[in-house]
Image (cartoon, rainbow, N blue to C red):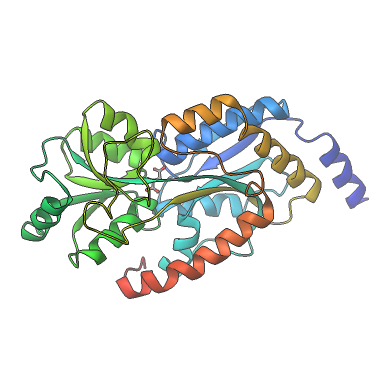
Length: 312
Ligand code: MLT
């Protein structure tokens, strides 16, 4: 009977609105990506996808919420590279990273920018590094908590310049950006999906991108390598997850809908305006997301251990 019921459930799925959890505050990069994709997937599936922001603990609270949700396909998670780094950063997590989720697919890989309040004295990256080293007890760096992309990028930067800094944690870089524009905090590393418009409007200044090539929508910003800091590179890949044990038929429907959403002209254009692009169809699959998560846990574990950074 159970499987029959399961079959029926999958057949008429979705028969009511779906909740997609963003593990960071509204108005930040993860929220921006999610609302664009959720809108397109909702149109395709014929049911609204309601975006719910569950911030805190660098994204691990929101991920934990989905790990414990019903496995009926009505509670999903859109999360980024932080899913991989948190597996090492946190001694105990409210979920088992590699066994608590089913995989829908990869969504996009977003570049990062090192940005500062618009009146921050340093003129370029070299000047920033000197200034930060000289004023290391005064300078403040914003991030979205241990496990956020802004935390990882900051950790890489501080390791590269061998200077630990005072960090100001937020529940997302949406609110962090408000303080950066308001000059309440000095600088941060954040995704182009959140910094592009503020850079173009002059409300914040940008030093470098963390990409091999320049970001097409930010042509005047040098890469870290061009600016003299080779190896300061990180891309923020995002994926959609469901609680482990969700029916394969439902996962298939969600993967197909994600692949369609990533070809939606509005999604493609908005991603391009914000410095990124949709994952390919081959990457918007459960196997590709699972492989990415597994390989990224292995890649970042030694880097995090070398930096000696942990959340208790
Ligand atoms: C991050 O650094 O991970 C971002 O803050 C996530 C977000 O706010 O969307």
